[in-house]
Amino acid sequence: MANVIDLLRPTDTPALISPGGTKLSFRALRDRVGQVAGGLKEHGVQPGDRILLLVPMGIDLYVSLLAVFHLGATAMLVDPSGPVDNILKRYPPTGMVGSAKAHMLRLKHPALRGLQLYISTGFTPLPHRSLKRLAAEVPEVDPGTHPALLTFTTGTTGAPKAIARSHAFLRAQHEVLADHMALGPGDVDLPTLPVFLLHSLAGGATCVIPDADLRAVGQVDPDPVLRQIDNQGITSTSGSPAFFQRLADRLEQTQTRMDGLRHIFTGGARVPSGLIDQLAVVAPNAELHIVYGSTEAEPIAVLDARRNRERLAQAEALGQGALVGTPVPAISIRIDAPSGEPGEVMVAGPHVNPGYLDDPEAEARTKVRDGAVIWHRTGDAGWQDESGDLWLAGRVGEDISGLWPLIAEGAAERLQWVRRAGLVAIQDEPVIAVELHQAPEDWAEQLHHATGARAVAVEHVPVDPRHNAKVDRDRLASLIE
Image (cartoon, rainbow, N blue to C red; front, side, top):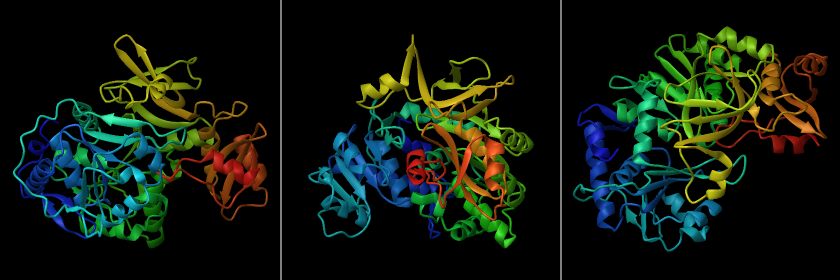
């Protein structure tokens, strides 16, 4: 990844298509990235500087991101739904590229004041330089070993940890993804995560930026996205199960299909077999892939979900856990538990992040050194079956009297009148909380029989802010107690 610009093919094929339909060819993207990189260097940005990007999903975001990469500076991406203040205080940026609205955060967050450089994508009354006017000769820069990208874990299991991805790490991740997401010229991809968009761009695929507020994928308006899929000839897309549930439900309501799709990649949380069944119908020509991974290691395992539809449904009905597929060849798996019993999944490989930035305590908790090999503790409890496929039961320590969340929730959601389920401990007793829809009178008895847990009905099972698919067990328990 030493020369980002050389990875962008000088062709007139569209590289990026904005939600509004604006197209930027690979040639134009290559030129613009070089100009912005030159402008950043002209204004003092050096290799290793941290540049915070607070730009909505769009062409400006990816031009800025690639320009920062080319300079050897470090691009910081912060989830606005997370603890922004704590992150900025701990990892102060050198400069900021943001929307006009984002620059108003300088009035709210002291950590955003006094930076060396402010660049805005639109007008703001605060001092700034315009991204549109940023242009200079393409610089020759050796990025060295500085991190290329700084992102943060969700913080659902503690304080967010800083993941620093080097250029070499991003290259290794791209190569591993290429074996399972082999997108290239001729493909039109609609990815919902920047890492997957960068992978697709590097392969030469056209990338369409979703016309959606991805800060809450579980509430996305499906209609604009479905219009993009139809109008832009989308051939592949990736996202959270909650994102695809919105699309699938609308397609069922309107009795329409996504016939042109050839690949759907989903993950980030348990993927219900019912969703796979829906997608198999509304996207009849698409291969359906479940991708299991984490912020520190993406991907870990991949499953051909269409081929395994019956297996997935049977696993839920029998309470066998969540099947996430075959580990990718580049990764090693270690589970310190008797065969067939849930134990913590540990992984190692070239695309497994070896540590956290300036956080030795987090490294001590999650990294295990075995000679030259660094094992990452995923925090997920699972096992491998006789064929080597990986199954998950939940997070380590989430079992309640031997009952695991992903096992109980999968069994509950096989009942057609259960919209969503979440397992929690109430006074050390396993309780399955469910959202109901036209449930029979004996719903509680049926749920107890299916899961082994006492059943209660709730109006809404709270979920995580990033994927809108992982159960927020602390909030759920507070609703029941």
